[in-house]
Length: 468
Image 1: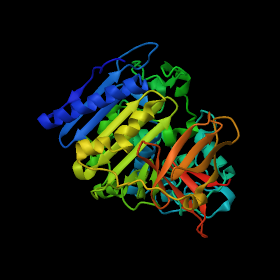
Image 2: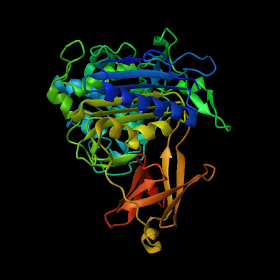
Image 3: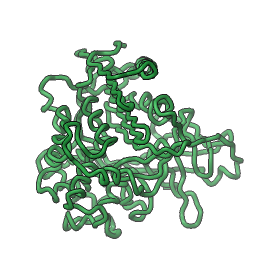
Image 4: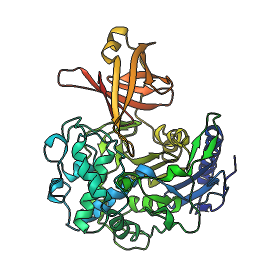
């Protein structure tokens, strides 16, 4: 595995900071080796110190060192750019978060006519319909309108506004609201309202805009456990841009993080958003639950995450084939970290650094809420046993079932992914209805219906129906 690449940034790092950054370097290099990750870029803000570095290569088949200007797809961290664009419109008085979506998109029809959905509910993942929808509606300027029109065909899983369920389709609906309010395409709106004002010159929704060739190639993992370049994984339908389409560099991600840690001004000093509106993005969370960690809920597109010390963390991450990323802010500690990877094994490193609180402990002295494993009796586990099913819609096909079987074992539950090679993982309870997933420290939880029966299993933010 290649050693750290060029393009490193460092400013005013004291001896303690230098030690922490050395530990970060070692963590990344070890993870690249352990998980066969070809390229990584990382950036850290710690008070007045900024550190950024590239590691490895952009493409194993045509090696070029990763640096701080290498462009990766940031996947679902794009959602925060949709939220930031929406909040700029709120700040100007052109958009109300608590207005129904139909005020801005007349004729929008939610699934099963299940009541009005507000813009805020789109951005905090609580409209209740199936969220894992990637269907392709073309590449022209009407692609997003067609995608959002098709939302009416999705199943409604839970009542509007009542349950957090990670929802890609909802964020695309928010993108369509932005189009209608601005009278421009979603991509042009983000450019004029966020990317341009913040000086993010290495961020775009169009890979062809990166004319210098400094763009990471996505990689997959072969049966031998080794990475190989898979350029086709770069493709994402245009209708998915609001929830996953942005390409960006770690240098741009640091500038973006610095903005969200600040008072609403860009690095140039230009006022981009009021401080009140900026803080509102990480306030007033919707319903909570789990998404790898425990959540208070989502604010305006940001995960709001508690810590054992009572300091809140503002976070997002991204997962698409070949690209996996993390972005975390702790405003009270003036700390942020961003990491971009170009391989399907990237989540193993991202989870270690972000979800398992390695970076939080090192840089901010914070940790996850306590989770002491406990064993349940066979009788207590019986309520959770059985089959759980979710659906996902790919680029071209009909919905595909994702099926998991849960069975009592050794005081916990053994999860078997049906049709996925029989992969099994242990779930260990640490409080009522909350479990640790395997030996990673990642968290998931069960939801009950009005009668107290276990109705759903929430894993990675996705709802799987019990018995469905």
